[in-house]
Amino acid sequence: MTSHPASVSARPRRALVFGASGAIGASLLTRLLEAGWSVDALSRAPQAAGPALRWHAGAFAAMPDTLPARVDAIFSCGPLDLFSLWYADVAIDCPRVVAFGSTSDATKQAASDPGERELAMRLRTSGERVFAAAAARGAAATLLRPTLVYGSGRDRNLSRIVELARRSGVFVLPADARGRRQPVHVDDLATAAQAAVDAPAAHGQAFALPGGETLDYRTMVARTLACLQPAPRLLVVPGPLFDAALWAAHRAGRLHGLPPGAVARMREDLVFDPTPAHEAFGYAPRTFDPDATMFA
Image (cartoon, rainbow, N blue to C red; front, side):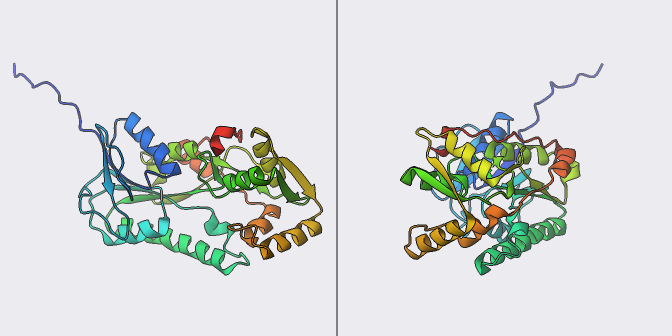
């Protein structure tokens, strides 16, 4: 009888993660390591390595020469435009790419602000560039497009509202701020990326990733403020009065970083269908239940 050598455990899959120190990337990094992946991660500043984790210091404008020549999957959790240019130009052996974009590619397409329209075009062009580069080298790409992201304290939406409200003890909204929203937690986005990488139905596809609950803007803000201690007051005023006060605040330079388009969209529905992502890779995000630790 011929003897066979003892089976050797398969090597761990290797991932290259861009934006690994960011909100989504940090959550994804934890999940990949817990699932037994070996991870190469990129950040601008050196980070603490681990048994299955290697950090590479650099940026897209100054990419280190230490990145692996072959990985099983690439995850992009940072700026899609910069990643798309790098990926289109680099020679790396990788069969699977999962990149995060944003539903802003649709919601800001017809914005009044030229900068927001340019952002929407840049997102769409970058996504197309990733798909084209993947197809040219026989790889499978998936684009994930989150809605309003929260949960890490580093987002530019609810965390900005919390910052303004904490500063003054009050947050003012127009009475007609009833546009519907679907806030999505960063951990649900990380789970989606991990699931999508192994889902053949996600190959070559883009998916909107809304949160698990649809609620109007005013309710979303009220629920956010209510979880803080002490809870800032939500003041609702008539729309014309709000617009006049906002104009005066902008003129006085008291609302840095809050573009007029963000205010206009409070009144608009920004709603996306999670069904395609659910059918392709089981996407099932949580309802909106914020707590103060998410805005520390």
